[in-house]
Length: 167
Image (cartoon, rainbow, N blue to C red; front, side):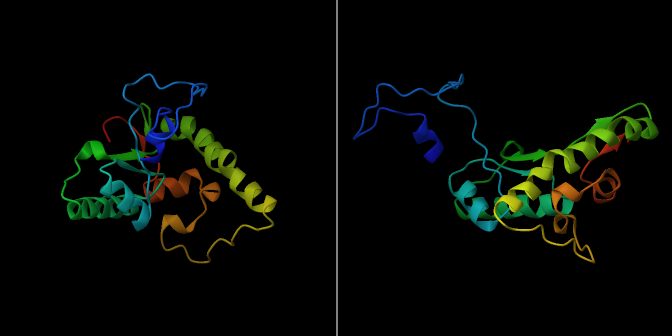
């Protein structure tokens, strides 16, 4: 695996005495590897190498499809992934009431989407590209660029759970 090879400097053909890996991994033999994937190609690589996969900021429908495909591809390679092989990244906020959860979380979640992820627009501008126009009709959450998401959209699409602990 390429990442694992980066951490080794004593190989079959070369020995590097003055390589600095910083910070050095504390875990031995190495930290856990997760290959986030959303395409068949990425999921195939993860499944064929028995590496856990992950999904970040996707709708529940898309996450289910990705993990189902990963399990299918893993089966093709002779193994069955468990829950520890499927990772999910989402914002979650819990407060005493739904109203308070919204009041406390909304500005931070909107800041994340619209400010922190706005670098995508800047990257496109640097490459002489412009952001694609927002589709007139949104079929699925993945049709909207992450930097255009907002609190209400994320709530409707199940991208950012928030609310009372008992919900």
